[in-house]
Amino acid sequence: MQIGKPQLESIVQALTVILPARQPADATLHHFFREHKNLGSRDRALIADTVYAALRRRRYLEHVTPGATPREIALAALVKVQGVGIGQIESALTPTEKAWLVTLKSEPAEALPFEVQADLPDWVIALLRKQYSDEEILALARSLQQPAPLDLRVNSLKAPREAVLEKFDRDNIVAVPTKLAPWGVRLREKPALNKYVLFTEGVVEVQDEGSQLLGLLMEPRRGEMIVDFCAGAGGKTLQMGAAMASQGRLYAFDISEKRLTNLGPRLKRSGLSNVHPQRIANENDAKVKRLRGKIDRVLVDAPCTGLGTLRRNPDLKMRQVETAVAELNVKQRNILDAAAALVKPGGRLVYGTCSLLEAENEAIVTAFLASHPDFKLVPAKDVFARIGIEVEGTGDYMHLLPHRHDTDGFFAAVLQREGK
Image (cartoon, rainbow, N blue to C red; front, side, top):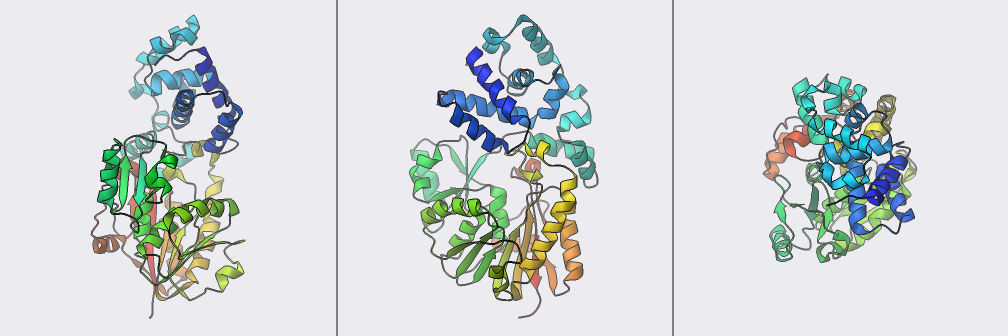
């Protein structure tokens, strides 16, 4: 595909508003497209792909571009990251730019400093070095530089996975079962799902395979009372509701009215009748307190740095700062304490994050267990074994890593309250 001056200029304009990282990149890009309604679908796809390629490799691109201007970053992203031939964009280049890109294209990646190859902030690398070797960090980092696949979860109330895969095949959409999650489907391309019959009828929902595995650790059962404490837009809520066969009572708590509003259409499509979304002011809201000691299972997908989602949210590398970790730790401990109070004797509490950092994961759980002697750790591998799943590297905790499992990065601990 040839990329002319107007297309390149649109990419540069988009990067100009997105690179300052004042807002999440997806929201900024959505606003950009709303203001540039003249752009066709093909141009929008090119702009989005290039912007996200630039964000995933921003540190590298700033290292190899003379002034790190939005135009230089756009050109380097196209040629060096996305593999666009110089001939395909030649009509949009100045002679100086063409000469620079020819030189850049021939430079080997191996000669770059470790931090630039990893394309992670120094503070993230420093924390990861407490957990992994440089070789492992580089493998992890390179996997985070790739676009995330599109995973779906089949709504077990509406269809078996085999029937969904057959429907995709009939419609010439390449889909395969996920390797670990029993209701997961992975698409090779990214079609317009919002108009596709399986989506509009609630047969499938978008949900990363890693998120599905976190939901499975809850082992929800029919007729139980369950709380999704930080429900967000409700992916795991809907997963658990289907596993409960829409029986029992499932509370979806969140402090964000907007996120719960986004759950509304998904809930309607799902056909579930046992889900009760509720906005709470904080973890000590009266709606939370009235359920103390009454809940069979509580899921805490805690607010975190989100570093495990860098494949789909690469701008977090710029928007997160090291000081945020300590602030998040306070939230994580407070939420986990409040959620634990809901669990009845013999009940289950699952703590999860999409973080890669020990400070947000094991450290939180270790401190919780030290101050809550009535809870014990249930090895995550034992829960998966009961379900018939073997997840590489899972022992006491679930650790999902993109380069090992081809999912988003996730951590989870399963905790059980003593007594009956």
